[in-house]
Image (cartoon, rainbow, N blue to C red):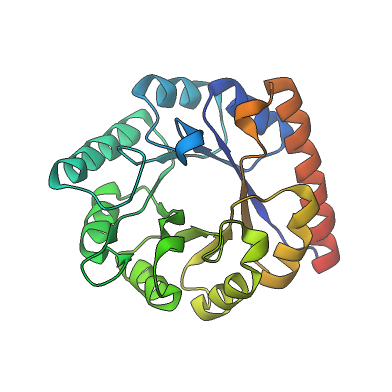
Length: 235
């Protein structure tokens, strides 16, 4: 039996979102300023992408680059950005809030509030997770917020370097939340990532910011084929 692995592609332009869909992506993560790790896309970008792309789109909710410890005004800004995403018709949002009062950990209270505010849109907790001092505690905290998945590189800069932690997170989560490996994922390293973790979703930008839309479509298609071939071997 072939397993199914969902492919999420991160983009910052409409043309690349269209190319990702044409190349076989299953879902888009839409951001602006990917060079900084991604911030909330503009209203115009969200609307134009929604109008031209049929596959699910998750919008990044991050009011600025830098750390993930937000002021009250930034928290209110995130609520407004979520409301815009809902009104435009995006399919979900991506966010992450941390607290540094006793070491870096998930800001459970305010993340929970945003998850509730986003309802019925599902929420992915992004790679702010990887900055937490204790990934086990962070996992339980994110599960408690009601988010449905965690985008993570296993606490490392790249998912390929965090395989042991990723494998542990998938096992420990026990189906309570999705664990989606991301961070430097490419066709050539996707096999060990999926083989070790048995994750059912994978995330990559495939160097979207420095690739033409035509070439990007080819890259996404090649990635899709590689993942499908791997899924058959894992099944």
